[in-house]
Image (cartoon, rainbow, N blue to C red):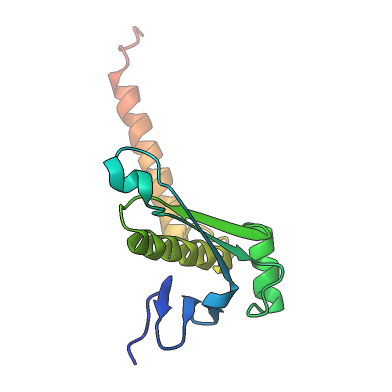
Length: 147
């Protein structure tokens, strides 16, 4: 079995892979299709190529409590993604799935807290030396005083 990239469908399992620890069954996704806007002639006027996918975070049984809390905080209770870039409904479906996977993966990403650091003593000395040198250069530019 080839590992799926995040935001892709695993065909034999029928899951949307969001991260290593989060896989969403496709049955939990709600799809809507409508006519895509813009030019395209008769094909665009008669085909429902615009794809909209919705995922209900609150009622999803496939999410753990921490995942659900993090997603509710970051993306809301319902995640909605629309794709109307292509003329093909199949391709727009794929784009919508990729975008949904990316949005959920970004919402689940745990940010590492910043660790405050202090400048090293050598860096402090170098900074003070640069300041002294710069001040000396400016002092030498000044007009000579008449003593």
